[in-house]
Image 1: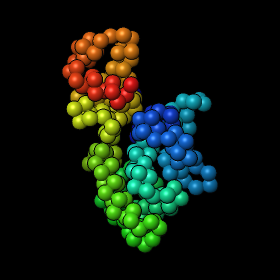
Image 2 (image 1 turned 90 degrees about the vertical axis):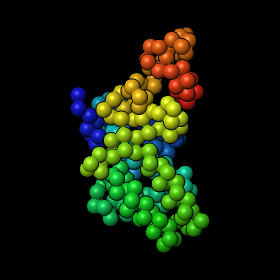
Image 3 (image 1 turned 30 degrees about the vertical axis):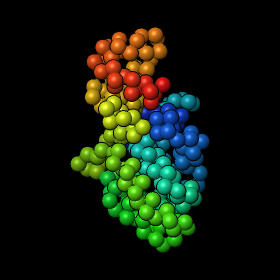
Length: 213
């Protein structure tokens, strides 16, 4: 089945928050539309409790998490996101490649104009945002296609790629789902057996288990 990055629900809010290492309560606020456009786009789940976050929403949450890490207050994140979307004339601007160039400039400009009241955050916003944006890969149209999960070491690179694992984190090397590695280990198999089963080195399996389990 073809996955639409904008309309195919891949993950629940709980799964998305866990993979991005952020509070689920924060993500739920970002997903709530209220009277305004949500900060993070969602789709209607087939049933209550089913996945509702498409890949574009995962990327938006990753970008917004970077702004929070840089010290931007929640209300000002919402204002800044609205300005970027309006400037780019694109409701998905937070998940497009332009956010890595023009978008960073917009956030820094807003900080300079005192939208961010704590002026010492200006450089932090630029540095932290650029650092997080390097985790995103884009296609030729500027659409996000892959997100690296930075808490995994480069020796065991893990990504969320909607083409593999139906949104579950997979190892870049062979597209094995992280949860499959963890599940097999939890059945009591030694690390050497898990490594052999998935054609991985024992060091990679240990790195994956250390972060995921």
